[in-house]
Image 1 (cartoon, helix red, strand yellow):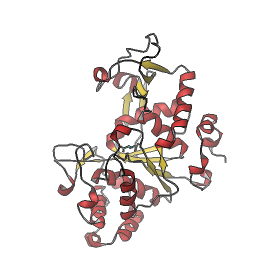
Image 2 (tube, rainbow, N blue to C red):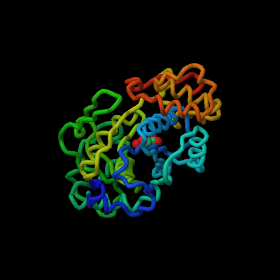
Image 3 (cartoon, rainbow, N blue to C red):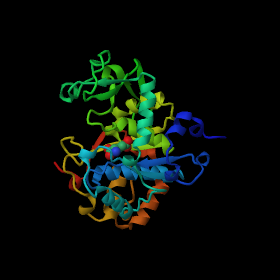
Image 4 (tube, rainbow, N blue to C red):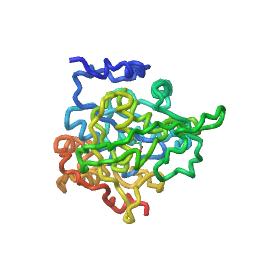
Length: 323
Ligand code: GLU
């Protein structure tokens, strides 16, 4: 049967560089997973959880596992972080398939999609200062406003009324009334950068991602992504949100909270062992000294998504916490 992704005309328009797509005919691949870090710093415990969880779920299902560098948000990027991330993944035995995709090389595709949405009158310019609308649902201020030529603006997508339902493979069903809880959201920022939601949806579709396994901090963003998938008529992937690694006070272990490079905090096999435990996989104690290859092999064979705690967050082992 022909893969629907190949006959979707919009998708064809977006597929500007097929050489980046890994070689296997997609119709034969039932599972394509991915890890998509932002290169704003080295891999910390929280990002390794996402990398390992997505890797093991993909490999356990004989799937492919792709790597994408989400390097659109230039102010957040750290020079050389992408190379460090690739090296850390290899040290941890997390080998990806195909070529690494960089979002910074995909501007043409984002522009295509934006033009498509614009031609359907789904976007409008927004002149609201960010400070004024940050952290609360967008009240729709600029929806009806007259367009002001040459004034710097963001582009927002009009959100339709209704509830978006996320059937997550780990967490309980998540519902969001997009219009009431989020409002019309940004597709291109006032500084000209394409928004994360647009890029992630287009790239996941273009890379043929079928399963997205990532941290639960992105749960609340998923309805926006589902809405965009519907508007862009791309296939919807399956989602599984892993518990987030947090400090004792519930703060996400992240680059923003100055989380340390996980490989500076211990041997790679110890990190993997701790991650397997965090993910509820219960590796036997004698595996704590096993080499990386053996731990990864064990993880692939024994992986059970049903063992991952159905929690939004879990306190990380002490040495990986920052606060
Ligand atoms: N690039 C995002 C991050 O590092 C993750 C994107 C995603 O998994 O959808 O937080």
